[in-house]
Image (cartoon, rainbow, N blue to C red; front, top):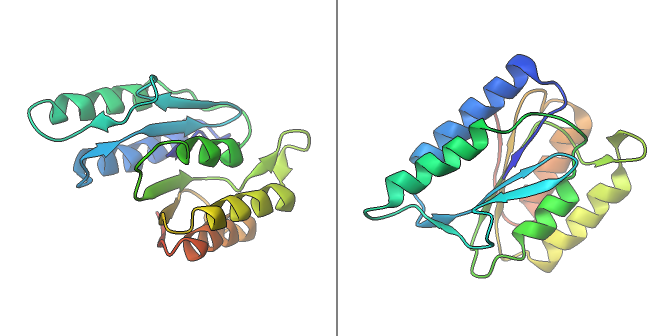
Length: 162
């Protein structure tokens, strides 16, 4: 998953470049790209996973990259809905959560521990699916760093700061 940040500019370019590198080189058979800010969008849009192996694999990866390049950063960090969406895909065996911001409350525009707790509960319901978290930008921020490390810990995933 890739999150749209509020900062725009170079911060968004850096985030896209990191996600682009992962999409190009990640050793997976199928994947979905979930882009989230105030809303949640998926690619492919039809609810299926993109087959990124075989004869059409390279073209599918290019389509994912094109979709990512077309995103404009805006809004708040709707991690909860992005995670809910991710868990609807049948057969997923792992996730990578890219984020440059801790989950926020849309009414407050800032970190919300209650929203983070809902995400932790959701992760516990699916704890056999590892969520590897990648902190982008200021992942030293206490709220973001704690959130990403907790999600990874609950699901036996790994945290990485970029």
